[in-house]
Structures are given as C-alpha cells and as structure tokens.
Image (cartoon, rainbow, N blue to C red; front, side, top):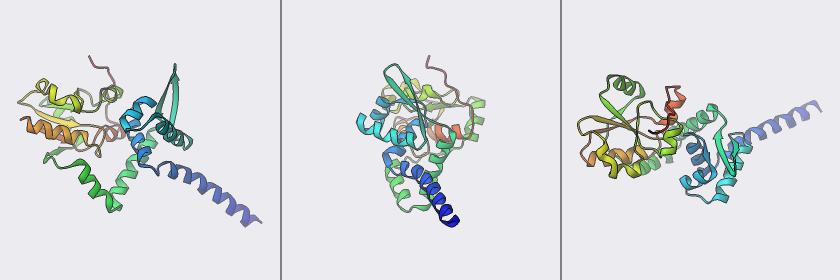
Length: 225
C-alpha cells in the first residue's frame, strides 16, 4: 500500500513537471518567450511580432501562464504579459543552447536562418572596454519598444527596418557594433550585411540583449530623446 502511494505521488510530481515541458513544446510559444525576454508586451504587440492572429496568440499565452512562465497585468482594456522572472529566461536560453549542441537539425536550420555576413564578432567584455574608450558606436536594431524596455547603455536605436533610410545618422569613420535580441536573432545579421554593403565598418556582438541581461550587465531603460 505504501509503495502504491509513493508511486502515485511520484507520478503526480512528474506529471506536474511535464506541464512545463508541454508548454515549451511549440515553436510559436518559444518565439513568444523570446519576445517577452525583451520586455513586457501587449497581446496585440506579441501577435504582430510573431505573425499570429489574436486568438492563437492568446491561447499560446494562456498555456504559458498555466505553466507559470508568464504573468499579466491589466491597464485599461489592454492586457500586458511579461516573464515571471529571470529563471524563465535562463531556461529558455539553456533550451536553445542544448538543442543546438545536441540536436543535429538545429545547426543547419540556424545557418539557413541567419545566413552569412562575414562579420567579426566582439564579446560583451570587449564591447564594454571599447565603449569605455569611446572608439565605437553601439547600434541596437530591435524595434523601438524593445529598446525602450531596456538596452545597452549608450546604444543608438535604429530598428533594422529603418536602417537603410537612416544610415546617414551613423558615422562613416567609426566602427559600429550591432546587437539585437539574442544570439539566435537574425536582425543583427541583416543590419551588418546592409551596413557593410553601404560602406560602414560593422561588426556584431556575439550575443544579444537576452544574454546581456542574464549576465547581469548594466541596462538602461531611458526613453528615446
């Protein structure tokens, strides 16, 4: 009898663990976590960014909420979602890294998605040292709302879809270090390709805002001037 009770209790425990696993078993839910790792967003904003309709987005968010990964707050008629803590962001980052290291299909899919830009990469430590000397421009190419939720101190905000029209705002004689959401985001790659084609000397941060936050490095959330 005692053994039966123990086995039942263990099954319930592992079933509870499995709820978290099931919540992560969707590419679109992982994409929503990626977006929320950049900062709080409304359902409308998440739907647009993920290319989903509102109904599907809400359903995915409810699954993530039931698993304890996201929390909500209401502001008038709008519902805002956010990650419940850095532990969720760490889990998401670790899941991607383990998949890249252990799943044969991931490196090929990653290479197809990101493409090749031939750019040199700089580490977070190298970037901080160079920012201190003032010999680089740090360029954040994420959407404005993500920049305003938190960015590398001193970074210039030019979303990648505006970069071609605003490239003259960047100096021609200074190296530009580009970053975006994270090491698996294509935004920085696209920006470096464009900048290089237009004659700028652009390199890429080897990580992004997700990894920068998880390393507990300084973050500036000041609004655009």
